[in-house]
Length: 139
Image (tube, rainbow, N blue to C red):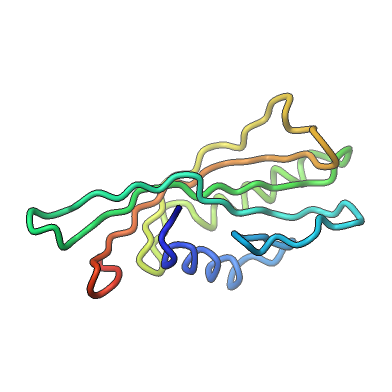
């Protein structure tokens, strides 16, 4: 699980800069829209921490932010891909709230995309977050 500071920074960036559709972060998932409208889910599937110095006072969390664009099934796939592209650009090689992001993967497109009520496109954005126990993030 990502550090709270990482989750807070990602959620703040989304709230400030993305309004195309509802976004459900961790522990914020509401009911799936009854009208089948598009929404985005944010997950943090992996986060590993390593010590950055011999004294053991500086740490780096390396992980991934996973975005799942749930577009209307049967609708034009371009809309879901456009939202995925917009989100990828919002997080591609950016630094915010102590989080450094890198180049996102491309959305996964295979037989699993059309399971259920939505056409789901997922991609991951790798990140680093440098921190100390006493002062929070640094870098």
